[in-house]
Length: 155
Image (spheres, helix red, strand yellow):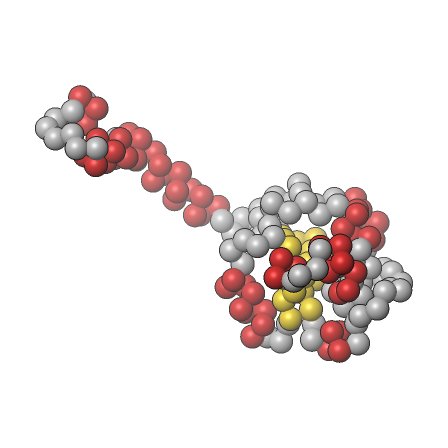
């Protein structure tokens, strides 16, 4: 569903395939990849404009939105991006995105799925080993100057 765009902008911007990135998190690798493939990544926090003014100036050109789970995408944001066709979230969940509003406007939503499950499992096992073997606790004792066989490390 294409919605009419009455704001200025577009034109040359449409030729550059702009992607709006909301949330200044660790997307630099993806940002570089998008740029390599001819996309222009718009970063509102690098602009002197307020977010509302930035969205108004680029609203007709933006077809894709890249967000993290820290950015809440609601109907108010979607209304400011009438040409938006896809939202990509770098999280496994989509609870920060108003899916009903996206469905009404014909916007596709995609996420990272289970891309991080292996990493999360590895991290959980590492934390378990740390707690069971008291690695961090012993490290704090040693860095604090304690020498010998503390009860915490010898049990």
